[in-house]
Amino acid sequence: MSSLFSGRVPQRVQIGRRPTENTFVLILELDASISETHARSVEITEHPVEAGVNVSDHVRQQPDNVVITGIISNTPAALPGTASGIAGGAVSNRDRDAFEILEDLQLNATIVTVISTIKVYDSMLLQNFTAPRDAGQGDSLNVTMTFRELLTAKTDFTQPPVTAQESSKATSSKGRQTPKTPAAETVESTNQSLLSQGISALF
Image (cartoon, rainbow, N blue to C red; front, side):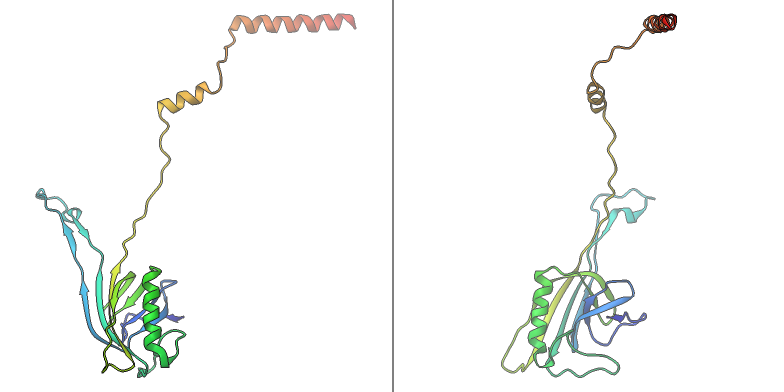
């Protein structure tokens, strides 16, 4: 685990995880980035918008997409002050290790951070990748990866209000109770007083 770069992008494309805001765990690093395609788009309403309203309310941000083509070889040239390679991978099999890592990232839907040469993308999923091989390629992996941002939304749960029907059911579940009238309460109080007087007279 290493500290995330301080406001700078690396010379090589890196893929990893960010357990915290200021830490970065490297998973995969390209030896060279051949091309990068960064795509951002918004969905704009097709309905007429009233003049003077907030236009941003009618525009919806779409997930970011980045397509990276790069090379991972078995004989990487380390950059000054950096550790090249794959986390935990043997240098002699970096191409195969890289392919297996990409498979795992895709099959397990692992959310990663992609550090490109111009921007850092968080909450990305590996949508697809291609890795063509030919006789003249040697022991290296030429790979094109497409990452797509995973948008998240926070849902607030609130207690629903009690309806009149539910309130009626709660009242009826207590059973029918006969309220005491003032006259009944007076008679009951008088009977208790006479009973007390009679007991006192016996003693």
